View 1 (cartoon, rainbow, N blue to C red):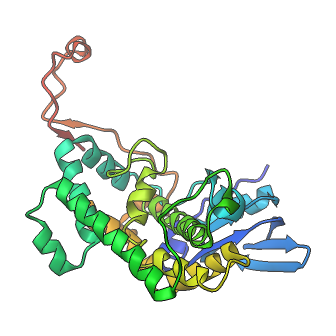
View 2 (cartoon, one colour):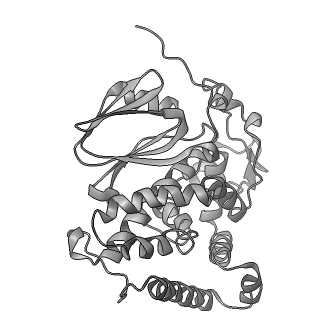
View 3 (cartoon, helix red, strand yellow):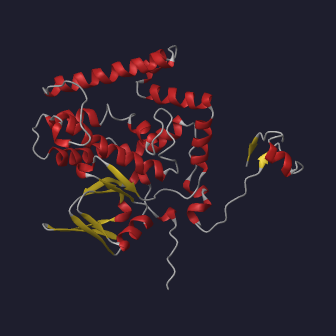
Length: 327
């Protein structure tokens, strides 16, 4: 049996240099050299796997084992979705091999004060700098109130600009067609945004489940990050597409999102924004030996301020001095 070559992640395109995403349904996906090949009744197309950040696999899609390996080796995230890409079923693994960002995320989340600080930074980032400075005197509840006003006004402005009737954000998860065109467009656009944020989060070595504002779901951190961009990207786009009619609205939204994300350089913004919110100093990729050598043994955790003199019996009984940190 042959040995699979261990991929050096330094050889792959950076996340912010990749195409945003591709959605496919009713197709067979296989591998051709280092490209993903999509076979549909209307033809076949190939896309270099390393150039793609996310591949959304919709209903009626089959993917070969070789295609999955190619996507994994190329750091392309696979997400299995429902029709119109609006329901999440499963995802593959992507990103980096180190765990330092995940440990930082978990550390901030586990302390109520640092978690609250992250929550406040997330809310403030949604406002422009001048507004953010004036909002720092508010309580968290007042800040959330201001955010609600901002979002409602954005909906009203978009509806007026595109002459689209608007009676609020409503949709039925079990009946896609029951919603009006603009709500269907919003759901489809947000699904695309979630997919891109999901890929960025995994690419940076964070956990999609460890949310700060949202909590309790495996996708909580994705919702936290996507909310930073909805008013700028998906909200106005959805109203613009809905104003053009409801024919193939989900497909037109996906195509428009791909163009808008690229024009707005969203790929280049997500990871720096996350690092800023979590107060992480971005390390150069060349400084991560695990990306160069996936077989490199992991370090042992060593608690600081604890020493090696405490008997195991005391540790298990909770009578030992509390460690102050670790390396």
